[in-house]
Image 1 (cartoon, helix red, strand yellow):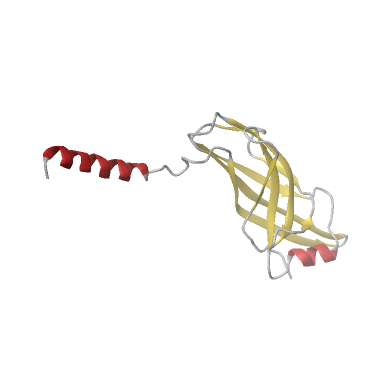
Image 2 (cartoon, helix red, strand yellow):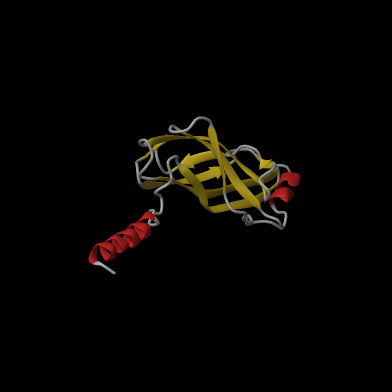
Length: 164
């Protein structure tokens, strides 16, 4: 093999290898949300049950997005395991970060949330639905300023504590 062919082959092999090296978030051009560490506790009382808990919302934006994104938080609910029906259709959220939150290019922002029903109680059939063996999810909507329309995100299935 002549030297020019060897050099061309080496450049071709290296460029092929480098073309496959896409960074972890390289292709994320809109905010990619995920809900982690979901927890819920059900407590029974004389007038009904209450539910409270927490979770983390992770927001990732890659380096190829058109710019930073401002993310507004919408409604949050506890849904069934299939994420098809709301079990608790509206939960009040308290965040550990001022909202809306800005996600810079090539970064990840984590927002912690606490939730409860404030002074409201849930009927026994709702408490029973929260305690079904299949588990539940936390679902929420958010608005990414880089995208038209709302984005829905749901946690993995988990089982609340306090179920009888």
